[in-house]
Amino acid sequence: MKYICADCGQEHEDWPALVFKAPDTYLGLTEEEREHADLTSEVCSIDKDGETLWYLRGVLTQYVYDACQYLDYGVWVSLSQESMKDYYEHYEDKEYKTTYFGWLVTNLPNYPPNTSFALPTNVEVDNSKGIPTILPHQKGDSIFIKEFYEGISTEEALRRIAALINP
Ligand SMILES: [Zn+2]
Image 1 (cartoon, rainbow, N blue to C red):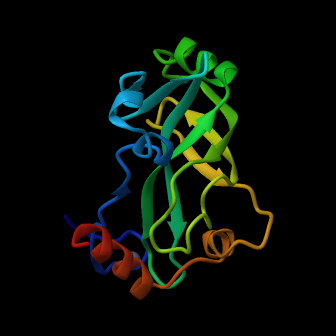
Image 2: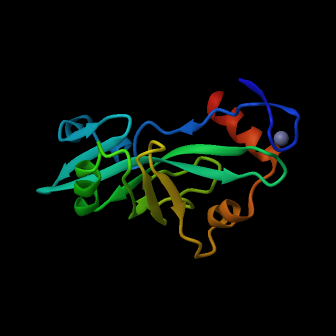
């Protein structure tokens, strides 16, 4: 989709969101283990050792420093049972806003293994807007955190889109 940018007045083309279909923890399960798991486009649960692990999909927006656009990732975070209960209780409430703590459980393919995995995040819920926003905590020396806060180039953003569309 092409559109005229409100910031610079030039024509831009929408970038696709890079969406991961399931948490890495789910992708790593065997067929048999998946019988004890549930996956939708938004929520995932895994029953393991008498416990239920909960995951939610959110949008992580990568700042691109030399463009008027951002690169959106659809990533997964793990949440506490308490947070999930709260999320479900307010699911129909379009005014509801809150923040949960979550661990990122998506390895982004552009980074060395485990660079983006298991990082602490804020999961910002605003039901008037749609699925939650994932905001990694600004700490540690991970290259992923550095790029998230300092931005990546347009060239790098386009490389990531191309890699996910034509792997
Ligand atoms: Zn622009």
